[in-house]
Length: 257
Image (cartoon, rainbow, N blue to C red; front, top):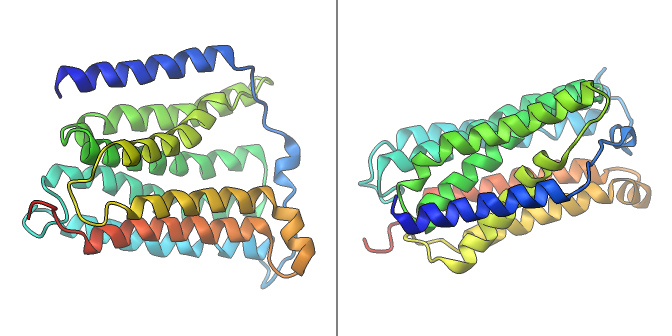
């Protein structure tokens, strides 16, 4: 990694640290666990919020298998075989989210939410490492992956630790989730991709934003139709965003090739 990228990353880290220090503590409201769709079906509580995680299961398994088969750069998917590990972390996070989110939605509370957020943090950090490597410098995909995963997982553990201490603090996890996607978008706007299909990442970010909108309108959407809730739609939109990442990898080629 050259000195320019090192100083850039240290600068971003410094801005995040200052922002974290200046932002007041953000608590986890217990009302978060009261999702709009409380229906049970086939002896599964909160049926639709639980089974809608099947999308993550399918995309996660498919993505892990695809990335592991692409061990060389000769097919155009990756310039360097090492690049695949960031995407492996992303798809592994997606796969584990299927189990963590289903477990959480079966009986929502803070203890179970930990297992929902841990794999999500892994996915966000894996995707950020992948985009850093592609858009800024190839070495960043591997050199930043470990530290980013540590920060992502640590942010969730920190939230749970403060929760058990009676002063739960979501600031760091919020930065991991929203900050990572903001950085992905900024990198895609500022730096060209060395692969075809680089613009597909804008669709990924768009569906992530759509998923968050569905999440925020959980009750309004459920009241409007009475069949499907905003949170269920959030799972479906987020899973489709993850699929778009996989589809990008499946069809892209090196721009110089």
